[in-house]
Length: 151
Ligand SMILES: [Fe+2]
Ligand SMILES: [Fe+2]
Image: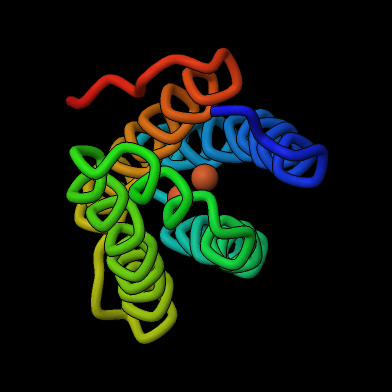
């Protein structure tokens, strides 16, 4: 695919955001792991909720940009066999935000104990990391002009 300059810029911008988000995801994961060691101080669980709440709007903005820049639509149009993967990635956005909200709201409401909050946070972060890796793979392949791989 020979992408116009604007599309190239958007692709590079998304890749740069993925790099920043990767650090935040790692920090949040370390916070969750640390909580298991600090379980004798239940108030520390609020730190996990605060970090999720910090990441959440940045993630929502990133997801919205990915959809609005038309990356998924262009890809699906160019390579129709990629369409299911593109739609899956788009649907992930909603599911990931819902699960992060469920954890932070559950912690704030006292419905989740440390073990449950950490487990669900870790699961969601793992899913988020895989999501971004799939997008990175698609972005790199389209920037290189090759047909994207399907996984
Ligand atoms: Fe995404
Ligand atoms: Fe992304």
